[in-house]
View 1: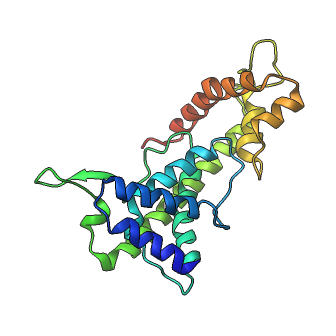
View 2: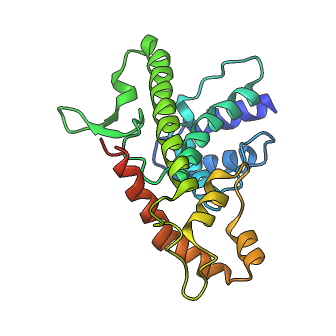
Length: 225
């Protein structure tokens, strides 16, 4: 498998981007990669969104991949999972605007698009990525603890007061505790089945009412500082 993956990646990278030939080779590569064991999984209802973002990132960045272990396959999976896990973390965060991304497009003085990663010295890149990851993890943990405490206590009753019409037992506090605080998180479909409520009704309420409340709570704790 190592040789097959290396051959497929080399084939993608030998073509001009964009070009029909590169896209065809890329499709072949993605079909193989997506079947590899070890790709990180999550029970979050929007996991596929994070996964799709990851495949888009892989499509753009595959020619920058460098194997860092004897197993080419394992190194590739670790590379993909490193990005995927951050996209999954974003799903559990009401607003991820503070996140620093080395892949964010920027323009140089000539107007050409590049990234922060391209502007950094190669030798310092790994250390910087580690430092950024540490800072982000600490911030996630601090805000996560504050939001968890608020959800569990709901002292002002804001979460329990928000629920679908005539279904007060399906309030936002219950949904937040089961979707965000449980490990592993419950699924909307399972919660709807337990509460005997329409799945789409519960999902719409979570998206339209509960998430905005949680976002407001997070901002009150300094999330946008």
